[in-house]
Image 1 (cartoon, rainbow, N blue to C red):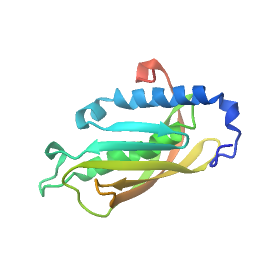
Image 2: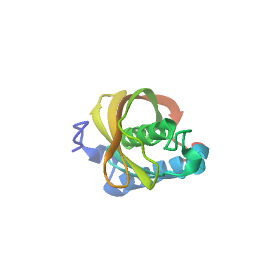
Image 3: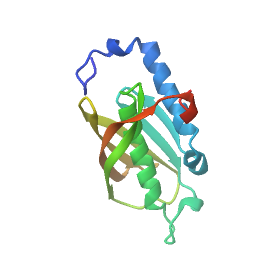
Image 4: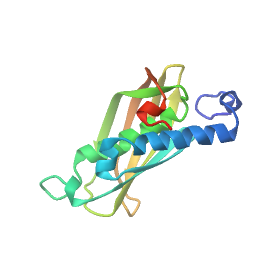
Length: 159
């Protein structure tokens, strides 16, 4: 039973089918040009995702810390992939995403942990928390995600 949707996960197939879906989603993220540019990686499970992002000087703002757009990239992707782990037929879209910046980071690896907190037939709410290398919370966010008409297919990296 899925803790968020309340539905029997056997409807989606056995555990191997779910794992295959998660790996295809991971491949989809890793094939995105922006992800390759910044070096982010993802690990996906049922209703959850974890993004790691190397904090490197090329991604800094003028004051010498990671630019806020990278915070957003990590947290939005963590929440997005947590949601898409529950949707096996189409790409989901971020409808809204609120971000709260708590502290700067200028080294190590940032880690965003996303999870689905509410799900209906076509709309999902997910949250994510961004941590620095010492597991201090540096940002948090939450958003609304909706199903799109874009099929999950090899053409978009879902392979």
